[in-house]
Length: 56
Image (cartoon, rainbow, N blue to C red; front, top):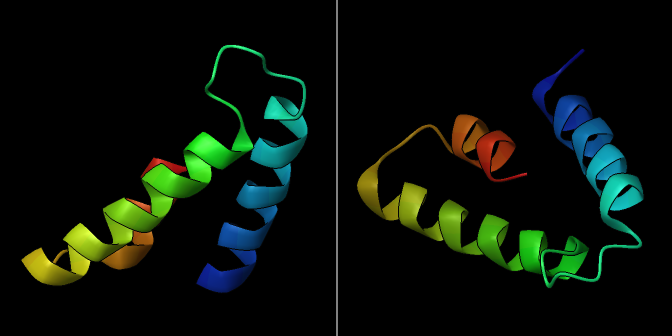
C-alpha cells in the first residue's frame, strides 16, 4: 500500500467516524487542522506524510 492509499483510507475512516459528531470536532474541523498541519510541516521541513496522517 503506498502513502496516498494510506491517506485516502484513513480519510475515509475519519469521515465515516466523525460524520455525526456534534461537538465541533467533525470532519471539517479535522480537514482544517490537516491543511494547517501540512503547511507548517512544509515550512519546517517535516515529513508531510507523517504529519498529515497524525492530523487525520
